[in-house]
Image (tube, rainbow, N blue to C red; front, side):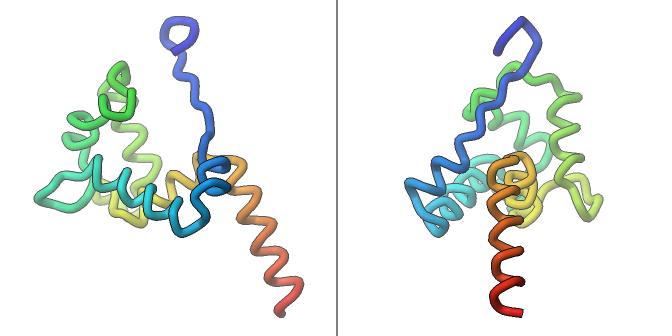
Length: 113
């Protein structure tokens, strides 16, 4: 936290991919999803996010901020995050990974199609 109420986010995903490789990184991403899920529903709900967010150092986030996080990733509008929605949201929150994925897709298109 910086300046009182400001959340400071440092993007460690690119270095994680570099150290773990793509497969290892995805495994860690899936572990993060499991950490935040409602065990009975196998999705991240507001309640499970609120209950488990302190494990990620997000204990100072308000209910409204947590709801916004859910809403940001909730593609199908069911009020919770599936594993795929969570992974897509995590990639979207990492500008460096988004740029690298864009370059990879462009390279694949240019060289294979």
